[in-house]
Amino acid sequence: MTTLIEREPEFETIDLDINMGPQHPSTHGVFRMVLTVDGERVMDVVPHIGYMHRGAEKLCENMDYRQGVGYMDRTEYLGELNAELAYVIAAEKLGGLEVPERAEYMRVIGAELNRLASHFMFMGAFGADVGYFGTSFTYAFRERENIQDLLEEVCGDRIMFNYFHPGGLAWDTPPNFPERCRWVLKQVRQGIKDLDGLMTHNEIFIARCRGIGAIAKQEAIDWGVTGPTLRASGHAFDIRKEEPYSIYDRFQFDIPTGQYGDVYDRYLVRLEEMRQSVRIIEQALDQLPEGPIKPEKMPRILRPPTGEIYVRTESPRGEYGVYAISTGGAKPYRLKVRSPCFSNLSALKSMTVGSYIADAVIILGSIDIVLCEVDR
Amino acid sequence: MTSEQTATPFFVPNMPSIAEREGLAEWPGGVADLFLKAVPGLQFEAKQALIDVVISVSRGDILRVLKAAKTHAELQFDYLRSLTGVDWEDGGREVVYHLYSNSKKHNVTIKARCSNDDPHMPSAIEVWRGADWHERETFDMFGIVFDGHPNLVPILLPDDFEGIHPLLKSRPLAAIEVKQGAGSAGDDAEANE
Image (cartoon, rainbow over all chains, first blue to last red):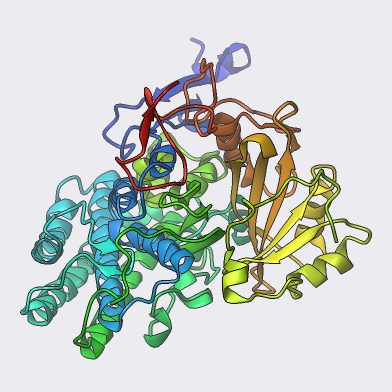
């Protein structure tokens, strides 16, 4: 009786191309990757994007600087206020507008609340990838709902906020905003503790995530990777500290970094970032002044003079940049959105080759992609 | 320092630029001086924009400049933030590189133009691996062919895409062509002649 092991030399194997197609529950959106597998080991990954390309950059060339804010919402649909912030800072710097203090503080509070909401979404979705299926979602979304309710009271919408206008805010916050915000922060702190207890020291979670999908620091910088994915590899690069925009230089907060650059470190970095965001919001609430939310000399239609600017902000996924060229009209001549997930995703092959198919799902989840941003 | 190209203006003339409005100096110094030292004999134009120094070089020099930007000891731009294109219509198509140095903490914007009849540009992929997808996207949107790129296929557009590339000004947004850079939305929409 011959066994398989004896027959091995004549055993013909081929590397299969497996399509994780655009419709897939684990690809976090319409994303397609073609995995070339040898057994269960991934030999090659070819990502295909572009399923959500809606031409945001071309559309923004025909919108003036107030109308484009809605498009920025729809590119980064989990960290919208950070995307809007980049756009309105570009419009203001080009147009020479000065933003009043209250609007600046509210912007920081809004952006950090949005970062919290985005990281809660990551905890929920990533936990589902790893195997928690529904548990991590229910834990995470309880707090995310609180944040979204608060932002709905302020901005009028649960996701597509459209709240920042060039010059300041669209309208002022309701009078009970500080108390409501502090109540939400109390729930959020408890929520972070719950998620920590649920996931961080779970033996199966660690076994699935430790040592998977690591990327070295220099390679990550070469690929243009930013955000928690880069910080997990040990490089403390956060634009809020390196090139502070808005009023981030007035707040004390730390930049969490990882050590090994693997999936578990990315999770830990995001968890710690949530705590730092809570810290920033508390400081901002303490310092929140009264006052106007739009400058007095606000032109009805902003016509910035000729010039260009590249504004970079730290969105929950990395460096979200807006490159705007103005030639004197009300609409930008060229608006380029530098999306962090686009660059993070381009490094997918170097992270995934050599791991199993199940790990490929986790690695993709750990980069935390938002397809609308990748494709614009 | 003047560029080797013909005298096409980089910004639309007769409009007050931000440099004139803010009184920014002509030669920005700083990073521009480092480039003078790093690439001897280079002809380029340098301007101080609102945040970065903008350096414009000719297409023949761009690969040399990018390599020096990454490797030279005083420059060390190891992080390619963004690589994109701009369509200046008769002025050609421009490729814009935004760079940052993690060790020296300085940043720069480098631009190079190619003409509409010969839209080729050397690929920066051997300098930064991250240029890979950015160049594919610029090729999709503007039709600029990056020589030396190993896999220049459409990334955002369908593989069998044909026609005018989307972000060129000659491609209208819809059936009604809207005049660029003037007025606000709705009051200057003109039908195609």
